[in-house]
Amino acid sequence: DAGVTQSPTHLIKTRGQQVTLRCSPISGHKSVSWYQQVLGQGPQFIFQYYEKEERGRGNFPDRFSARQFPNYSSELNVNALLLGDSALYLCASSFVGFDKNIQYFGAGTRLSVL
Amino acid sequence: QKEVEQNSGPLSVPEGAIASLNCTYSDRGSQSFFWYRQYSGKSPELIMSIYSNGDKEDGRFTAQLNKASQYVSLLIRDSQPSDSATYLCAVNLMNRDDKIIFGKGTRLHILP
Image 1: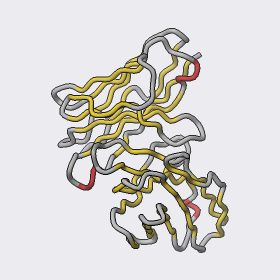
Image 2: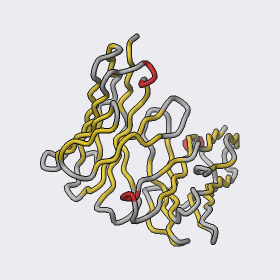
Image 3: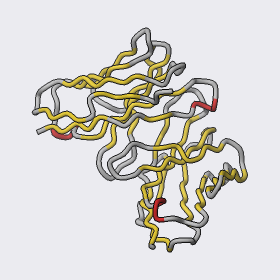
């Protein structure tokens, strides 16, 4: 079975631009979470979606938004990019209620903002 | 007080020895605890999960949980150079949702 897939793997943007990152969960997983990881830090929670509803939001500005589609894939959008948005963006999926919500991560999208 | 705290390291351990990684958390309501391994430039990979007080063993890895003291640890026996990575402690609060709080990670270096 395919794991969590993310696209693209790398992105280079300039300040002020907008970016969309995509994630497909493991088959059967209905929950998708997004994390931002900057160098030397642990992943920071951005959003969690379950059954197409937002279930949790981390301490990120409104420039960050996300959605989940009927097939449980998800997109993360970031508007008005800042240099500080440069990071590895991780998507994780889980089967809520089973295996105590263990999250499985995709390979990530590395975003560089110039 | 940070929610999940780890010593950032680096922790250097000779090959074949036991590596001991520690983590403390602030919220007593936390119910699920995870250790992830992350190689440089890669995404986190689940090593162990633990939910009850005590020890849980899986191969060379043992997770230990003490909810009264609010700490969780990971022991790696017979350390191998391939174990050199950053180990992330993660905590899920009260199983209400999937939000997981990560520590900053401990860099482990196994000396050949």
